[in-house]
Image (cartoon, rainbow, N blue to C red):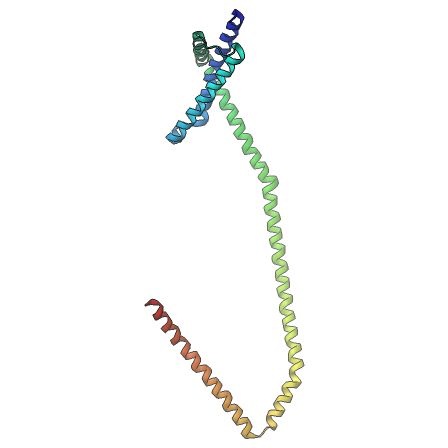
Length: 211
């Protein structure tokens, strides 16, 4: 390994140490361990360190074809320490400002979408409902009027048949009309008996179902 390669390796590992500190702070900020379950935190920690290890190895592979030396670990520690002492506060504040800006932008987009899309759609929906209800009321009114007109036409049309029937009924012999009245009275009495029996049958059926 040449001297220039070692220098590039040292410089790259110092940068990676700083990257590790920044990524660790970013990971802690988004993870929020106190609000997560232990198993979830454990899995995320494993994945985080696997990704970091792959990034470090890929960087070494690009710089010195993957040769691992002792000074590599020293360079990583130096970069991490430099980040902790010099850049941690600045980076944390900057990260928090970026997160808050994204949240505010997201809330602004939600409000804008509600004002421009959701509220007009709600108003359009309400307008359509009002129009449909109005049309339904108009149809009901016209339907009632039409039924009344049809009923009047039927009454007028069947009036001659009614008068003819009354005339025929009056011309029939008294014995025939009495017999017909007896038949109708018997039918009416039978229907009343059926109406009286129905509640008894319902109570009987309920008792059977309870058993």
